Image 1 (tube, helix red, strand yellow):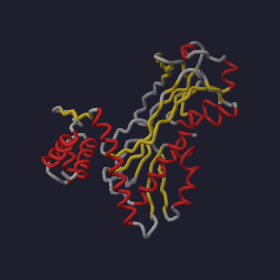
Image 2 (tube, one colour):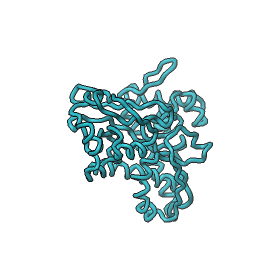
Image 3 (cartoon, one colour):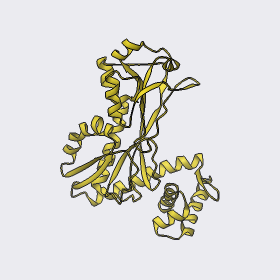
Image 4 (spheres, one colour):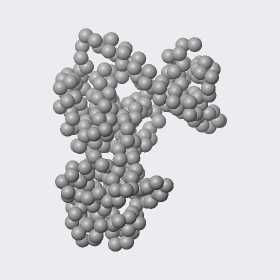
Length: 301
């Protein structure tokens, strides 16, 4: 058995969701993909996938092997790229898309570091957090907050971002400081956030030990952009739940005050994704690697 080919087949099956689609993407017969995965399971002595007539799901061992396989395949791709491009640094234009909050507060401020390292790469940046066809829109990669809805993409996780609940000093002076999340339903106003994708309101929740409480309250303002929500919170328009990295400077300055510190907010996953073609151009690969490292560094600060 070609172990590398078997790992590639296994990862393609997981990414695409079916053996048939994986075979189409690899341009090989379905029987070849099935055989490679079966041989891999036989050699490992464990079942990697639960198979039904409609669905494929990873076993616990399969999840661990999938994550390890991605690292190995990425390392092989990086090695190939480094050998092929050893005589030249990455160059050319790449087109990326990311949410405005990440662009404004995280990625753009760090771009001098990227350009100092890769002076021959130009970045065309679109702002958005929507389902897109990367190939049709000529995008090289996307940064996404929340669940990734497009299963045709290769998604590399970049950690999770915590949410915090807070309010401005002017708001608290008018309405008082709620001591528990349940207090928000009595005489308080919240700033509602709606999904820019679906228009549906987000429902945030807080946890403490085994207790889980959803944040509810009266509202006057609904926005579908985290930057606008932050501005509303600072202006005293209501209690705000949003990303910690957005409100941290305002918490430090005292303009905002964190509420319910004994409770933990949700954590939102972050991914950087690209089309299901693992042979990335070096200019794209260096940006992907740099962005993931940047996000992990931000979360460890």
